[in-house]
Image (cartoon, rainbow, N blue to C red):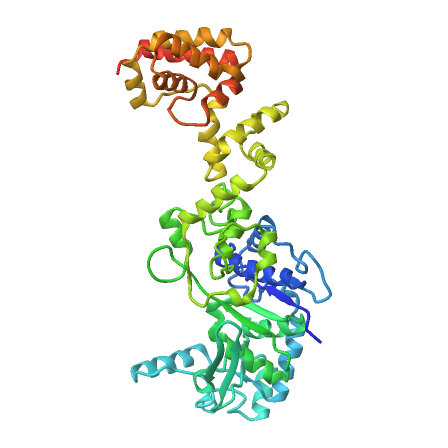
Length: 505
């Protein structure tokens, strides 16, 4: 019987959700949905020293904004909960006792200063200190003490940890679905701490217990966890669990320039976001949402960092990604982050997204001052400016002249056009606007006026655009005229005439 696909995204609430973590969540989500499985979110909050208030909310809000619907999690209860590790302590205590009884774990009472001494002593000799089979019976633990001594220390409340008893002189043969067979000698593996002195499990222990208990079929996580795979493999074997999940370690997201993985510092340095949404705990740090990106864009460019669709297609919706995603098309090598290409993705999605949907977003986020009865006009405006938008934030510059008279004029074009017969042309345009019944036909009437007076059509268009927009760029000029209306057009032309008469250049 084929095991149902169940994947988990298991972030630690130690800060905002980085774009790399979001990509991990996305790949888990896509794989689950492609295979009719469950997307589980588990909060791994056993490290209370690193816990940051607001982090869990940022994680959940980021997933929600991106459209990654959770099947099971802290806010979506399922039959495998609780979904916060801090609420699963009794389970971990039961399981660690099971390992102790099996002889696969042991109590360690070593003091921090003693371990520091051993590390420094090894460094002096050019060696690396490792706590495992070659020296553990020489250290202060239940393997070097009698049962009576051990029980006495534990019962007296002596500070201790519980370590995994790594098998001596064995080869761990484990498998990664992306990289193939991984072979590691146990002589290179520490006896990792499974339970800390505060009575909480470490990531390694809780992670394996939860994946087993929640019947996770595939562990899809970042490449940085690949060195932990042998230990996790050994823990499954220590419990006698044969049905290990399939492991997939995703390639790194690399810096735009240089070596190493993408970090928050890279975003700070180069001026691009590394979070999906705003983080407010340590001062306000804007995310892609606040920079004017669509969630569809973020999902799209993240999907292509370490995965390829097997075709030349680059623009995908979340639904389309679900239909084509497969683990077989994951890349082994790191993927370089490209902020400029991400902006191109956003421009493409803005063009692809339904006009009324963009209008709604622009109105809700930017056009607070537009009354509700202006919906039809606002939709026409957004349709005109949409081709010029790389981000939603560009709407201010692209549309401001529809709502406000130009405060300044492009200095270079102002100087150039003042040298023409501007007064004759602008006064003629005013007369023509007043006499045109329907501004939708203004283009043909203006062409007749230009032909009749033998004016330079380029100069006429330049003067009209400068008066209405304040610069010589923007959407189709005659669409602008129709949307602004006679009174606004006439008023702005008169403003430019006044400026030509009063401003020395």
